[in-house]
Length: 110
Length: 114
Image 1 (cartoon, chains in turn brown, yellow):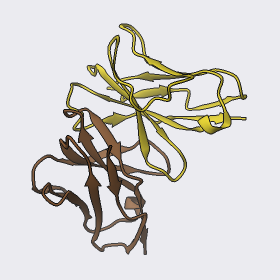
Image 2 (cartoon, rainbow over the protein chains, first blue to last red):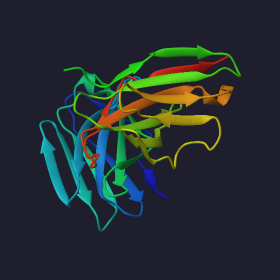
Image 3 (cartoon, rainbow over the protein chains, first blue to last red):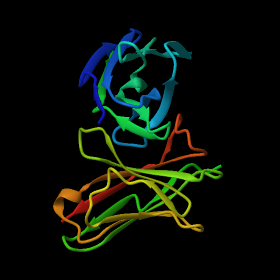
Image 4 (cartoon, chains in turn orange, purple):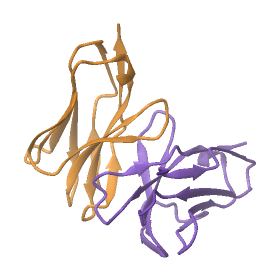
């Protein structure tokens, strides 16, 4: 089976940088994805890493180390609207099965 | 260009009744996934379907739960004889092809069993 670990809560101030870590144990690893969810709404895709290294998309970056079974999501220039839950998810099964972590609730304060 | 559409958004059922949740994938998407989310928890994979085929149902409870994605019309997740433990948010996601590197989720159906 698959298991993922990420912190349950992170608090940061507006304008700061925050890193949310994710470690995973899985078989048939295909890639690591990150999703954002506001107040139980629709999860929205943020990023996907299939290879080692950093992927940058605007204020958000995601990193993957396959050898360490580890990844992180980096959020820069935090804004109040970034307060949400962030989920890492491993993609397995040849690329179609997403298994989600339990999520990290990010609180951005003034 | 509508996204993934789920209905109803909220559903209340008495214990023992049936719940039917519908999901229309994004235009051009033929792969549908159903997830269940309990409060303060992550999304748990239930089933993966393509048109007229169940590809992976390893996350579906063996009893009372079934899913279909007919040639025409939305995908349906059916829960028979609901119990209080079925109360959760059920999300549907779709992707255009086999690789689910970017899943598009609907707003979910919140099922409450009373």
